[in-house]
Length: 281
Image (tube, rainbow, N blue to C red; front, top):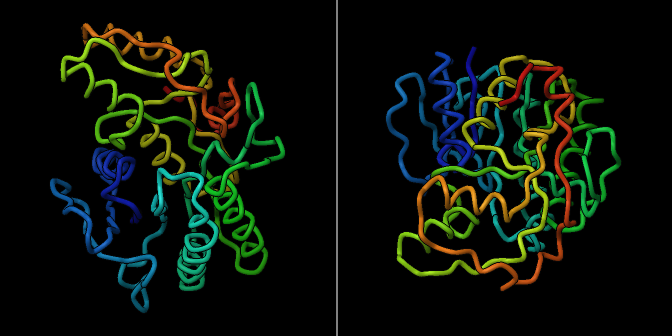
């Protein structure tokens, strides 16, 4: 089996490549020409592809993979930018449509929990979605477009709705990198919100393992939450990170307002994921 990965040099992509390597799967890493080089993956070839200006016969250039794990998406982490549906959505659809027309049989695509919108509590795949930011709207729109495409040109689709991932290499403005930077710089306090939000956090290495498991199934599973299913408050998460790393910094709860684009308490229902691939963590 050959598995191609877009966004291979990104936060999630690097862990997905490592997981494929661990399982002995032949892989093709798709990176933008401007991306940093990928090293240390003996079973992985590297192909430069710009989704906004893809080469002719991109599927052939990729070596006609059996599965594509599609992680690439530009414009993040600005979830409120109109770029997501004005520019990125049509580019994404055209690229994927061309691959399907050329013979790609299985797609595993990174969706987002933001597709659910401002709903609260445990979120399951059977719920109607109501995205409230341009990023979530564009992702859900791409999923719907691909469902229409399937009716004309059948292929297998796993739409992996990712919840909150953390780990080495994530965006520097994310919670954990900011906390680490503040602690290691010696400042006494870490400014943050009240921390009472309940969220679903998952180590990125675990998410990568789950994405690869979905890819190797080569099945049309539809939407599936990639999550822990365990709600934890941001306050408890920060306090646990400080304890694990033995940092002396103190959280300054309540310094910032709560985000307006998220509900106060939501997490993923992992039952469909568990039914597909077993224990998730």
